Each structure stands twice: as C-alpha cells, then as structure tokens.
Image 1 (cartoon, rainbow, N blue to C red):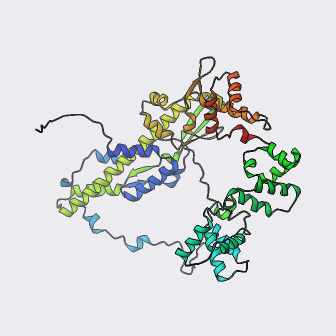
Image 2: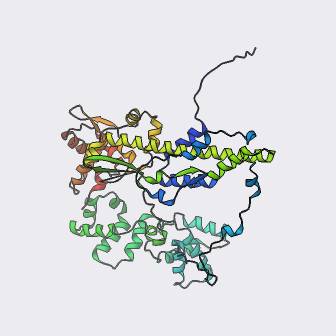
Image 3: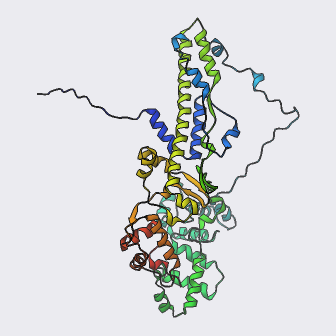
Length: 487
C-alpha cells in the first residue's frame, strides 16, 4: 500500500541575478568589456558615458543617481500615455545625415592586406615544378594533408584510398611516394615529413655537406633512438669520434626546426596581449593597489526611458498596447539598474579580494623575491574578506596583476604549505624556486638525478622525498637528469 508524506525542507538556491554576478566576477578585463558591449547592445535602457571614462587607470566607484531617484517613485503599468514614444518609431532622415563631407568627395576604401596561408604558399611553390595534371592533383592533395606544424600524419595507403573515394584520383603508392619527394623539396625545409626523424633528415640533406653535417645525418638516420635518449657514450663508441666532433654534430641537429610549419610567418597566430586587471605600486614605502579603470565603466539608466514611463503615468488614456509597451520598458529599466549594481559589486569584490592577497604577500611585493611568498590557500583569503571560497577562486582565475617585477597571474600566488627542518611552514613555491635554481647551477655534463636533488634540498633545510622532487620537477617542466645532459 502506497503512503503519501508531506515533507517541508529549506534549501538554498542561487537566483539568476546571483549566477550572473558570479559570471561577471570571473571575467578578466577584456572578456568583461565584451560582456559589457553585449549587454548595452541588448538593453537600450543602459547607456554608457564618454569613451574617455573607459581609459582611466585608477579604481573608482560610480554613483548611479539617475535611476535611484526615479525608482523612488514606483510606477505601475496600470497607473501609467507613451503616445510620443509609440508615434515616433522612425527617426527623421535629416537627423541621421552626416554633413562633414563635400559632394565631390570620392568614396575611398582602405586596402586590407590578404596574407597568404601556409598551404597556399606551398601550392604556389608547386608552380616551379614541371608536373602533368594528374601529378599536380596528387601534389595538391598531399599539401592539403600537411598540418600546421608541417607534418603529414597519414600513411601513404590511406591517402591513396582517400584520393580514390573523395577526389576521384586513381593512383598507386609508388606514384604517391614519387610526388611526396617533390613535396619534400618545398620550403620551409622539412615540410611534408611523416615523423620527426624524417623531418630532421630532410633538413640535414638541404644543408651544405660538411664532416659535422654528415655525422649528424648518419646519427639521425641510423642511431635516432640513442640520440633521443642522449646515450652519447654509445654514439662515441659507435662512430669512434672525439667528444668535440660529436658535440659539433649534435650542435648541427639542435639548430634544426622540429616544427617547420610553425616557422611560416603567415601561419603564426597573433599573440593576445595580457591586460592586467590590477596594478600594485610602491609609493612612499607603502603598497598601493589600483583596479584597471576599464573594469569601472561609466554607466547610467537612459533618461529617455524614464521619461517614457513618466509620460505613461501622466496619461489618462491607457490602451492595452501602451500597457504592454510600458511593461517592456519597465523590464529594461529594471535590468539596466541590476546590471549597474552588479558591476559596482564586481568592482568592490575584485578590489577587496586582491587587496587581501596583496597584504598577505606584502613581503614579496616589496622586493620581488619569490622565496618570500608565504603559503596561501583560497580559504585564507576567503576568511580575511568574508567571502565564499568559490568567489575568491573566481577572482583569482584568469586575472593578472601588474607589479614592479612584471605582470603575474594571480593564482600563482597560491600554494600549499610544507614544513622545513625548523618546523616552520614554507610555501611550495619557495621550494620549487630553490629546486629550479639548483638544477640551473648543476653541471650539465653530469646532471643531478632526483635522489641527489632531494639530498641537496635536505641540506638546505627542506626535507623532501625523492618522489616529491620528481613531482615538482614535472610541474616546472624540467626533464629527467639524462635528458638534461649536454656534451
């Protein structure tokens, strides 16, 4: 028998406005500006100030008085003639004309540079070779199979089948191999290779033959595994050469480009500049924090929309169409007011959180010594500012601060704590910095293995296990000792 029960329980759920605020807090400066533009395009009741306001470099709080004064006089749709608004949907043409040009001015367009793509450049180079129609079609297909790094990652049989099924080009593996040799003659040298070994060989064969180049070619062709694992003793024994001769051959290999496609100027992606969200300066022996002014735009609620609401309120005749229109206006006004308040709250949250981080790590910000970074986790800052840990995480995520020692990613200031031999808590960042310094100063002819690195750090007062050394080394993107060995 089924029984029905009635249970009451309380649960906390974020409102849509709170969720939107969290998303705003997480946005770095450039993404925030894009979000601001989108909101202003979608909501005509939201207006911005002069463009000069967007370029301020200091933190400032904006006061939004216009709508606050208006909101004090609440207007209901039933109490509110927006006849002027409804009857003037079209803007007179004379208001949209621009009169700062003469009739005899010619329309001029600025030419835009059309960069040649990596693959188009390779196809253009094929014009220098004498090829029949079929060979050219195969060559263009092979060029189209080259990735941005300059490699062909597909096997010849797969490409033969693909050309038959998708291009209607019926050929055999021998012909494709023949055309592939032509592709290998294209620039940059090494393009069209099917693996790293072939890529390096192609580049070496384009070099002027010398004793070092010949030895380097033989090493890559016949002793590639020993070279990649840096088994130099085996190479010396195999070829019966001196250390100096082997060193020159390896130097020839090190000058080669393992990613020939990446060297093409038209294939390089534009590097996006990092825009600091904060700036920390030392003024009169005191730390001064500022929030990038682009995070504090000048916004206000449209007075035209407020006047529409007032016109409706003063009107005696209120049709259904007018009531629907005023509901739309009120919705946009409420949305604009909320967005302005959310931006102000975002500014305050960003500022107080970064201010707490600055004071927590003030020893570092005064002299820039990374070994003075204190252990700091999200909860430490959350407790200082009275915010949720997730909010602090959103502030630190993907945001940068400009310091006297360079622009830093904020989340890099956070680290776990470990105890030194004195029982004091030290930051893992400090230990990683010391480990990095030890590896930089080691003898590259005899690099230190992880167990020796652990012994050295223990002597410096940091008792760390070998596996922890290996973990930190990997986090620092430092290879094992054998791969750090040099001739």
